Image (cartoon, rainbow, N blue to C red; front, side, top):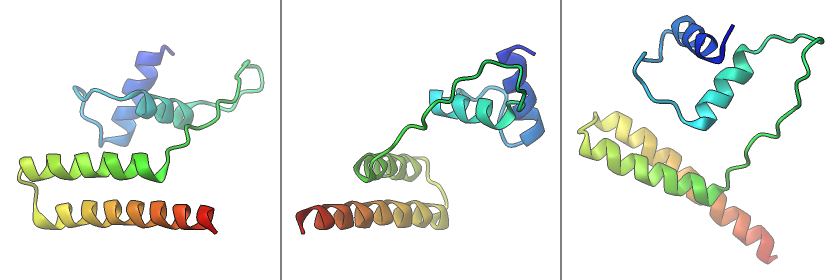
Length: 101
């Protein structure tokens, strides 16, 4: 099965992925990882997952928050993103405080 067929199969199986949605490299990696068959005959090298810092997460969530506001999303969805963003900031602050002790 080709990569394109694998991704299409995964999208159809999941049902939540629109056919015309553009995927990021991280999403493609995740789909490939989740749909890969465990076959001992394959020469697969393990790839270390990308480590995302609390700061990077906070910036991404802040950008997402601005986007959902522009798109006039429902208030409860905006509040979920705010909570996630605030949690990322709290984790960032906690990490900085631990390093300073």
